[in-house]
Image 1: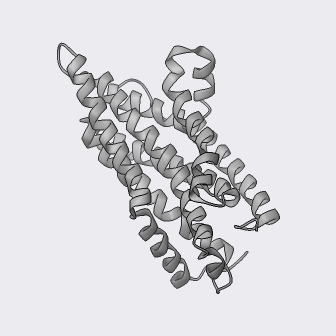
Image 2 (image 1 turned 30 degrees about the vertical axis):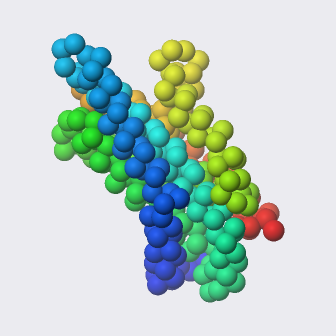
Length: 247
């Protein structure tokens, strides 16, 4: 296993964080926050007796699904594609930074942003959680962030530009967003959603905000871990065949 050098890892993380805060990527978490607020306003307008907990859960789910799918998958993929486009990737890879350091440096800042924004979305949606519920919510957010960023790295390997990155990630983003969103309208979609990390995230939010039952168990943990491991295997196969840049 390759050795991880702290200074090199921090240097890559700083580089990626700057990219995330640029206008090309910062709009995604901002849009998720704005969309949650708009959904909350919409539900409050439609509600006769005030905003219900179910409406708060729906507003929070909308923003969280968007944040995990767009920021997690496209954020990682787009940043890697941008480095290829600007020819900075090869400079990094021909330096003393190894593949593992680059991988961790690429996903850790995005995971941190995902979890932080998910925390902000709770306040924006006006949801109420106990300390224990916050712990479960942040844990599932972190596990989902790991899965989505690894998927983003897979697409990043095959993306040659930011435009190409937006094209290749769109089907995955739609799958992870739309299936949980439409799960209540179809039994088939509901079953599929229960095996997606975004679907599990949605179920956890709904149960926590509505105060119903047990929101998260060992089965859900194993599903997300299995999806993450599968994504890692796919990434390793793609990386061994192509490296970070197929060219």
